[in-house]
Amino acid sequence: MHFKVPMASAELDQRDSDAVLEVLRSGRLALGPKTREFEALVAAYTGVKHGIAVNSGTSALHILIRALGLGPGDQILVPSFTFAASVNAALYEGVTPVFVDIEPDTFNLDPDDLARKITPQTKAIMVVDVFGHPADWRPIQALADEHRLRIIDDACEALGAEYEGRKLGQFGDCATFAFYPNKQITTGEGGLIVTDDDEIARMARSLRNQGRGEMGAWLEHERLGFNFRMDEMSAALGVSQFKRLETFLEKRARVAARYSEKLAVFDWLVTPTVRPNVRMSWFVYVVMLAEGLQRDPLIKALEELGVPSRGYFAPIHTQPYIRKRFGDWEGALPVTEAIAQRTVALPFHNNLSDQDIDLVVDALAKAGRALEFG
Image 1: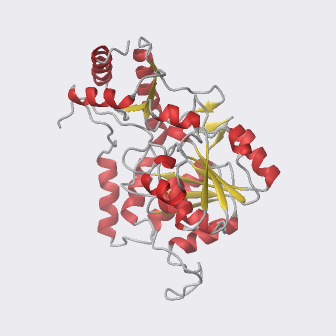
Image 2: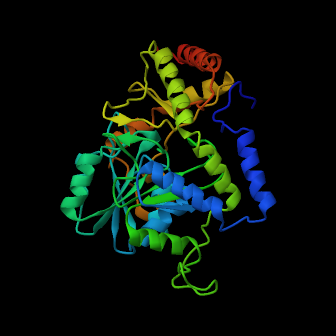
Image 3: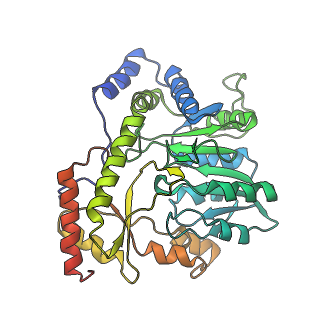
């Protein structure tokens, strides 16, 4: 299928190519200075002590589950309205996910349902800042403090976002970012852990590097670890991209604002909510259809008009592998289940032009009329 507009597109230029080529010419392709530079840049920007680069956001989450000492018999509270990695990272270590419902406007964890789901086996919370909108951190942190729970902030979709004037990465015990090509910046594949906790940082550096100690011999392994390191080419691309992060965030905000302005005429969809006490870091642009409407016919109709779209998200508790392992959760998360039938991601990237936006909006109008949505 040939689409008239791309679903997503990384912004790459000659500076990025030169940065990667410089590494290739140096001959130092792993465990080098570009990884350390990238880590330092992200940590300083975020306002924390440590940055630990890895090969994906999934690996970052997995490392943190292990670094926090979570394992079989422990429960972690996590939204179902998220990407699978948020849950899989716990499953890799035998931790039981307990699914929490979401707020109907931001799609983030509902603090009230979070409180209801805490049990004596609960040891941690996996907070997800969905689509780049920060979770409601004040009540979440208060619950964690009250019950002595650890917090991992899955900010893989939210680099640069802020809550009450503080950048994400400063909340909880530790946080993760990710750099897939549709993210705010890209390293191709890659992720990064940030934390102020010296022990978490020490463990994360060891676990990503086959369990080696920071001062040990190359073939001396202090613990069971992983090969989750970021290579130097990816880090160099990350450094180059990161230097333009604020420009990228401004571009994405402009595209989102233009969409919201144009889509205001449709009474059968709701544009994204951005609360006044946050800075949104736009990962994707997701609209919600009115109650009673289903997204699948719209996605199909848009495709026939040459416009791609995606159903973001398919709840994790409804996925076949989760049903097989934990049984049927249907009906347990009423807000998640209702919203997940109606959320649609539209084409979105830094340089989506006004003409492209108009094309998408026109296709939505035609599809809506054909489906008798309006």
